[in-house]
Image 1 (spheres, rainbow, N blue to C red):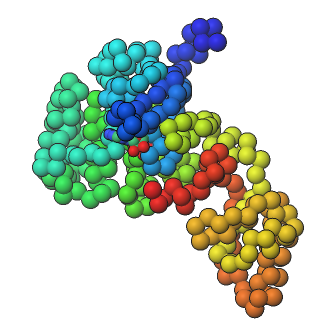
Image 2: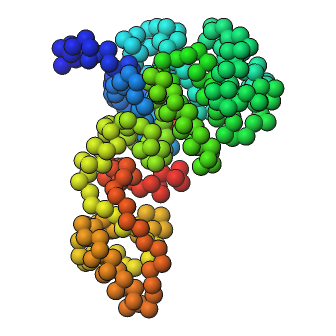
Image 3: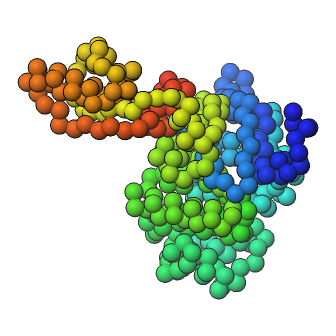
Length: 324
Ligand SMILES: Nc1ncnc2c1ncn2[C@@H]1O[C@H](COP(=O)(O)OP(=O)(O)O)[C@@H](O)[C@H]1O
Ligand SMILES: [Mg+2]
């Protein structure tokens, strides 16, 4: 019971989201973007909101930021009701929006000034340079924002999000559309901000990213939070067997009868076989291939992951996520 919780336990929860519902539009056109979402985010954790496009991730962050007014429920930041005291709550936040239109015609140095001013923080030139150096942008101070590469823009967006030295940082798809190297650079920055003791909330539709970065993950689908825990516990709760992955083309019924097989499915162009006896299943597959005068070129054994968790909870595969 909420009222019975100890004070310490309450204080550990830096963001509290309770029964949050959000809609866009009205009447027949109304979209229910969030339905009774409840979450508690702990001080100092990297928390991930994982879900496909349209799941409600950005809407949830907008409610936390006090940008979108919920239809029901509410958000408390350090005990402050965001709806009643948005400005006070916002002062604790560093925000990176999904589409950062970085006032393209300003230089990097000018942007830092503008942002700091927005937050009512005074940054002198040395402080601004130090901030940019932390994000490896010290050589770009005179460049126009629109001339930066994707990775540099993303690092700039992160620098701006921390211009006010916030305790809580909200990042909406911080690595979307980045190449693998730029993505890793952003991961390193996120880890560093975490090591500095800040609380981070990131949204992503990448399971890999959620597993790599997040202490805890909420899985969100169609406006509802369907699970919330550490990646390891979410995966363990599945009680799933390892998965053989191959591009071999074979009728599913033929695979289902192989030893150890628990489940067979296609994930994109890959055949995925959950099996408790991978060696024997593989031998059976190879035998089937030989009978057809073919060979299996690629085969991979992987442990169950968050993708399997999502599939189990929602019936949708990763492939289905990517097309939307
Ligand atoms: N400004 C808007 N007007 C109408 N519908 C919107 C608006 N923004 C988002 N939506 C809808 O709300 C739902 C949740 O969207 P969003 O929060 O952006 O999801 P996500 O960030 O997970 O992709 C989707 O169905 C989306 O189409
Ligand atoms: Mg979004």
